[in-house]
Length: 175
Image (cartoon, rainbow, N blue to C red; front, side):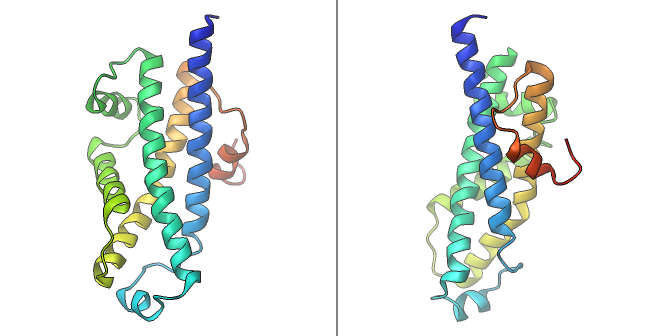
């Protein structure tokens, strides 16, 4: 095989593994938080690291996973021969392939990612709403991660180098 193409395929495999790893850590961290997050609990426990460290990790991992998935989807489209000159084309191709359920769902995640990266408010109602919105979108990011994994395997024959995170995300009894 062409060495440049082989390197590109390895890069996608590594990106997918990074997405799986990040999705697993995000899901595990999300499980450590009592949902829904309320303004009252944030205000009452505002100096409680047992609450705020997982929330900070969720914020960071959500943004990182969303960014990683965007990069991996673009790279998947390039290897699949799809137009990838704009992210809207990438998104349309990924929606058509069943990787993302809808462009609107992805854009909602992107908007939350942007808020997670750039919003530093002190209003506990707004903060609680933000984290509850992030928590509600974690299953979507996991779903996109697994769908991208499956599509890359089915259409390109690409698997991540380490299968452990894929198996862990799918849970017991899944291949």
